[in-house]
Length: 491
Image 1: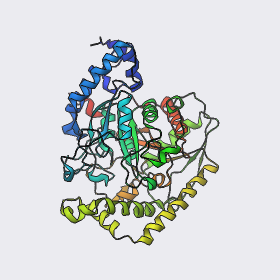
Image 2: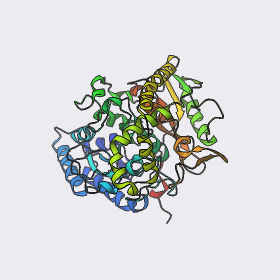
Image 3: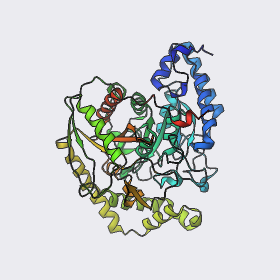
Image 4: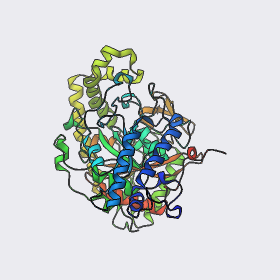
């Protein structure tokens, strides 16, 4: 085992970035085995409290860490992410690991092969440590789960880490994995990223290929990474991206060299940012927490200080809700209708209602949703005629209670708005419908110590642009030094 020099890195090696870890590994100042051991210890110490993981692979992880350590000793053929721990949401296939979609109905199901994203991370040397918690079938914007337990937010355990990739976001925030990958059909990577004070990106359709999508041509769901540092987000996205024979959208993906693009140079003079605090019919038609708005606007002001032209704009993108309901509703009925017939009483009430609603859609309604999606795409495209990047709050309010009812009104500054399911996350799903890349970046913490995220959206395949903006913001107001309270319990 390598000698660890205390002066070379902070005491908590689990919170180091992949970039820092691999540099220390190369210099033999830190051991991959030591880092994986400490990561597994972190999972064990926190999982009963936070319910981040549904399953872990300690023996396999340590074996992979030993292989990485041996490669660093040899100094040849070292994979680029060798020895970096990562976790995977329980809806993405990892060979030999459970694949339950968060439901007891699939207990005992084991994935026969890695998904392309997982296979590429493992080929790059990353060390798989376990599967992360999610709401059953990913149907909630929070992370309540009757089978595995309700996941909790490491900044306030009475609050949600977000859904549906909440276990992944909480794991990254606490150092229970350096990287994690989730899925995003309506904000399910970006919502948890905002709730947990980390980064999360939903890339352009097809950038990260999927072998699991039933309707690959009509994709809404994208696999996306979560990380604490911009460089790590870019690096993992670079590794996972690219053509795969199972995903038709991946065939058009250009090579972007995202890791190289995600660097701050203090110059945004050529960038036009459109600030869109509201995405409904007009101001006052939707709620926005004042602290969320203030933190987002402070971040944009800092970017303007680097030369970015920031202008407030308005866009009515409320139509995405109905489009998403039609397309996702029909797909849910196709995929899970048999569960409704065979195990209806065992399904969560909210999910059962959504599958039932999908079964009541007419062919005309589904076709209208598909036609409207094309019109919606063109509406979003038009926003880039006078802007290079769109900026919105990721969420309209800070993290809600862990077991909040998605159908209950969202209360913001004393005013009740629509159901939480729509009023809290409505800045996210428009860009699943349009296919545009969207990235959530931490921009601060509320007076109660809850994280807030700012969402950047770009044209198709503009991930490099979004990562560059995120890197500039990270340099202006770093967040990776912040430690969730669960890591420092009162003595």
